[in-house]
Length: 228
Ligand code: ADP
Ligand code: ADP
Image 1 (cartoon, rainbow, N blue to C red):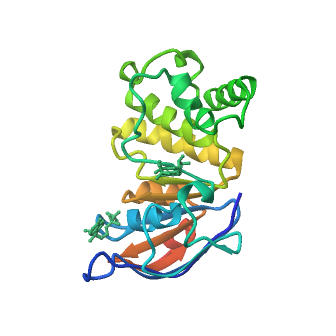
Image 2 (tube, helix red, strand yellow):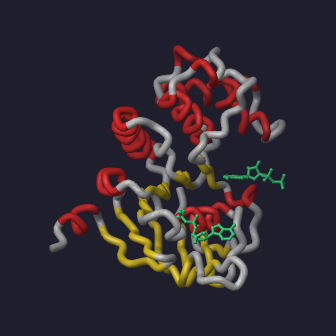
Image 3 (tube, rainbow, N blue to C red):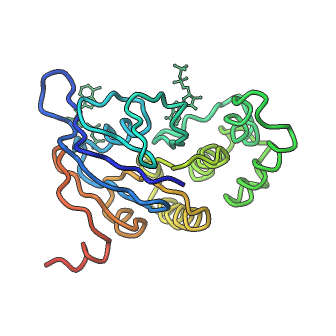
């Protein structure tokens, strides 16, 4: 778990209007934080800065009070689930989930890898599908594999970039419930980006509303509902 602090974060691409404009926010240990707003408001840019895939133009990013502006993604120990899942088509579900652990060469024994993969697959109800390839899975199952791959790493925080936007309405509903359940169970700090109001208001401990790169407000779903 980790506390993630954004201090006056700015991102400019070229010399255009800032994609992220002076955003300050403290995401608490174990909190589920949503970033919501229309397409182009800077959500992905913000997430990519946190994970380290995008340079920060100005401002400061802290993880557990330590400045990480210059740390590589590898050294931030965060785990990101992308919109398009990016599963490896030639690998089974098991090997897709195990992949990040195998990548950390020598860090885990095969037994340790096995027990982590099985814990994740049970939590995500993938036990019966471990030997299948992604092409033979439904959209929701593929999305769960992508999540499995993110959670086996035991990262300090999980970052989700519109993970449900490619699913149909019914699956989105199911997965929403599963994500909420998983996050409560693991208690891991989570940043979740979406343009979907329902996701924002049902999943988050707090919701940060972005507009044209500017943080408009940050409040609990209840406070947002109760607004006139
Ligand atoms: P969102 O995730 O909310 O849709 P983005 O963070 O993707 O928003 O984009 C915010 C703004 O930054 C948009 O105006 C977008 O066109 C611009 N932008 C995003 N990525 C780049 C890039 N690599 N180069 C130039 N402009 C970009
Ligand atoms: P390199 O330039 O060193 O090849 P990569 O982009 O391949 O860097 O990533 C190296 C490491 O950074 C990965 O093993 C992974 O741990 C981490 N990483 C890269 N992208 C992400 C991401 N989106 N979310 C979390 N970690 C990432």
